[in-house]
Image: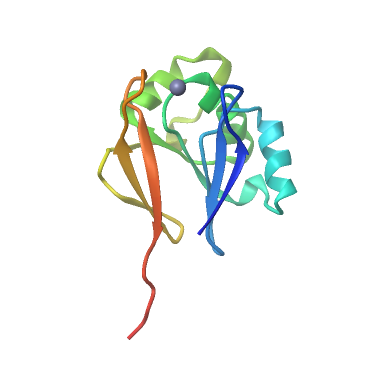
Length: 141
Ligand SMILES: [Zn+2]
């Protein structure tokens, strides 16, 4: 599993996590263009991302979300309260309902060959979570 920080801090947050097979983004808090440039600089393409996991709806975590979702049809995962709050943020723009996938803290879900485990965190937002990524043990008998 590899992790690459595209941006962090108050100006915006975006992390790429992946394996040999699949990659995803955690948050998209800088412009879509800066995310693309950041991914390209580590040899990845935005179109290769399997999903965007959103921790919470603050703009420094979702600024580029709408652009990437519309341009690449990337599925977006977040708690229902987070997704509802994102829809209220005008600058994000319209996101196709089909791309929004509500998740529940402590309920794991698969993305590519990774298992994502969301945990509730304490932050001044609707229903913020952090994500733990793991890979399945693929040892065959
Ligand atoms: Zn925040």
